[in-house]
Structures are given as C-alpha cells and as structure tokens.
Length: 217
Image (tube, rainbow, N blue to C red; front, side):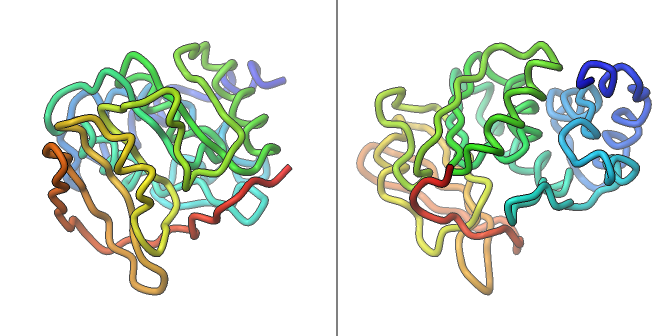
C-alpha cells in the first residue's frame, strides 16, 4: 500500500512546494531539490494527504507534528552552510520527513526517536522511498547517540528548555548544532563547536513540540 501512495502522487506537487520555499528565502539548491524529490504525503495520515504540500505543520499522532516545510528546509540549509556534512545526528525522527530530506544531503543519518510507534512508521516511509543510509534508534533524544559520534552536524526537531550537554559533547570540532530552545518563547539557534568553546547564533522565533526526556513504547 505504501508504494502505491508514493507512485500515485505527482512529483509536481513537491516541485511546486520547492518553488514556494525558494520564494520565501530558501536558497540552497540541494535542499530545494530534496524537497522537490520527497513525497510529503506519505509522511502524514492519509486523511490529511490533501494538505501535505501546504507550507504548514500537521499532526501525525502521539501528540507530535510533522514540521512546516519552510522550517524543515531552513534547518537543513543551516546545517549545510559550511558544506555537506559527512554525517548527521537527528533528534526526533517523528514521521521521518525531515529524516528523508537529510538522507539526501549527507552520507549517513543517525536518527533517535523516543516514541517507538512513530519510529516504525518512519521506517516504512523511508523504505518506500528506497533510502537506506539512515540508522534509527529508539531512545532518549536528550542523550543523543554517543557510540555513533562525533557528528559533523546535529539537528533537533523538538524544543528543550536548555541545550542538552550530551549533544554538545557529541559535536565534532567545527560541527554545527541546529536546535530550537525554549518553552513559551522558542528561538532557533545554531551552535558551532570551536574546540572546547561553543559559539551560539540566534536565527528566528519558532514553535516546536517540547523535547521530552525518556522513551515511550
């Protein structure tokens, strides 16, 4: 059934979405091409498929959302600002849409999700797209994935109230962490590692679900 959902949706929808995001300021050609190539409708509940190519966040169950395409593209573009990273750690697999974009932008993606049901859903979607450079872990995103690090880039798709120290520790020298931080007032930040120092830059106000510690079956 999944493959028919992929084949039944015209690639034109993804291309139109990429054009829309370019008009809104996304410049990275690789990111825009990944957006154009990705059938976003398979990553949302079928009842919401008609809204899949709107530039809006949508619920995916378990109290989680698939991020607004602009934010997906913006965070991906920020990760690539200093060139193509060799590997990326993603905290918060969700439905796998951001994961699928990342997998087209790097050699290897390591993705951590605390809700196992969402992880299974994401695996099915990535398999439908024939993407095989993603490793997934069911675990606590606050802890990262130390055994697979250090990472050239880390992206967090939910908002902690403070930057998790474990993620800073797993960033390689010169690596970039793109993360929304805050509770009521959230800010998207880039944190670049320079030896034992971390250089922080604020990008824009955002709204994400909270980064909850622990695991959930």
